[in-house]
Image (cartoon, rainbow, N blue to C red; front, side, top):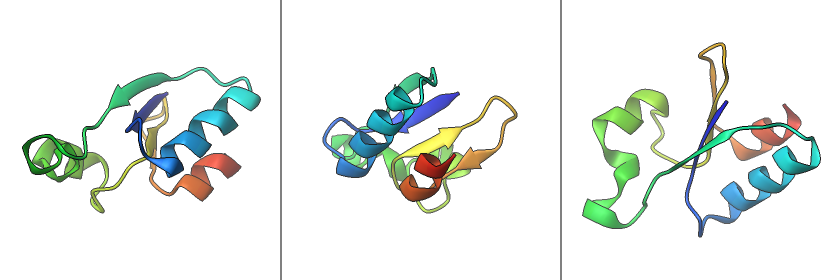
Length: 74
């Protein structure tokens, strides 16, 4: 799994805690919300999450979960 995250995002922080508590392994992919006007607005990231927000969790199946509460329930 790939977790698209930003270190100062409270939603991302909650998701990282939940994944750790569940014992799920993931690869953290940083998305800088400030650099160059926000990497979350880049076309490459918008292809992953059309809302342009973090966190987003890409599952091994290729499916993407984009809401922190939905990720936590996963």
